[in-house]
Image 1 (cartoon, rainbow, N blue to C red):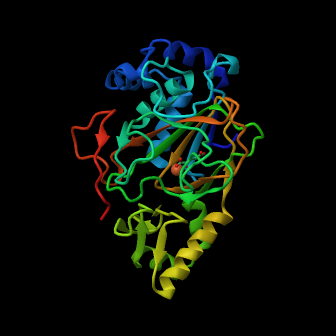
Image 2 (cartoon, helix red, strand yellow; image 1 turned 120 degrees about the vertical axis):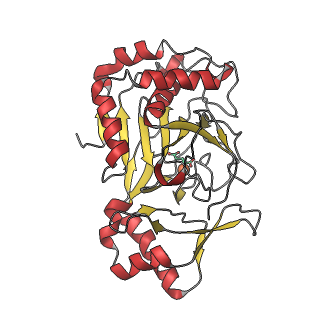
Length: 324
Ligand SMILES: O=C(O)CCC(=O)C(=O)O
Ligand SMILES: [Fe+2]
């Protein structure tokens, strides 16, 4: 098995026993819930603990870590896939929410964000991802159309380090792959000139489709020249000079060349390094039958690249601050 996948099936009973000690109604007191989840992270099976610590310290070439075989409920014990959000405040804890928060607590601080444009979902740590018929074309609620490569919250000064997606239900036909493009794999495909341009050129990210003034300067590559971070958004980043336009296009092509589909199925938890991969999602067909694809999502901050300044707590809502 590649180092980016950990088979958790052997630990199901142990993980269920851990989850059973968490508050059964997480939204009754989210701060308390996240504190408990963080404590439990210390008691994860050693292989998982080591895998998370290693990924946190060094990342990997794929830019993600996938935990498979987590103890999801039998499908007929799960509620129907939601058709609206937020989740009811009194909803009982689901196993894949428990896994999301324990693993998230093991990586850093579970965090809610004000995105700075009318948040399409309520501002909460625990997001629900499910298809909706009238989805905004750039949102994760789409199904018929591909969700194009992007970095989550790249316009935010405190962009989260990790995106965690845990899966209670996969899509019916097994088509809704999460698409990942790793900069560690794409970088060798870029010439030195293109790399310099991506570090130093002028690129603009428009983060609110309804407001032409809502823009930030964005750097497609930044950080360590030999192992850079990537920030990419195929639908919303533009450049003006021919050199910048060509460099952006070369990055887009390179990320596509290394694309890897990760098909999430029930019991999977995908940890995306939001600094090292751009991600999207393949189109799929929703049936609106209460059994459509259902993911739980949370963002995690760490001390990388100015996300923290001290005194933060898991469960905090980070106010909007535009990236500079
Ligand atoms: O559904 C997925 O696999 C990814 C969704 C996503 O990238 C998003 O909502 O930002
Ligand atoms: Fe995303």
